[in-house]
Image: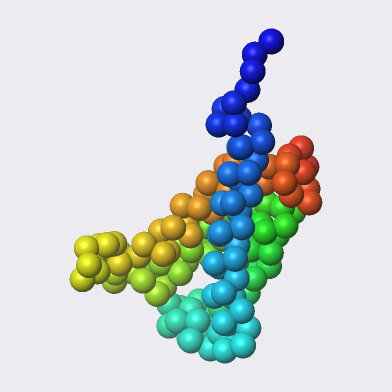
Length: 142
């Protein structure tokens, strides 16, 4: 019989997935709630300026409210994380394209936050929700 240590797999993997999901979801929800109360006029304007239908700007509610809630609770986690990743790619292309190769005055990448959201969403999409979720470790799409 092989003894398992906390760091080997199992419970610690699922705890790590939970922490990643919670941090990604909660931090994104702040942006989504801000848009709920402040509106998305600036986003619909940027979408229209890019030559797309302005109404597509309302999809930010899906990427910053609905998908983070699904990730937080562990329901349809993988598709929700892909929605967040797509949302971040669109945000980078529409809003932050000029900063893509920029550094801050303190030496960090100008898009650290956006990069964190994108990379975390991809990680959640690949890892799934784990057992500490409503869908459970073996839940479909989790």
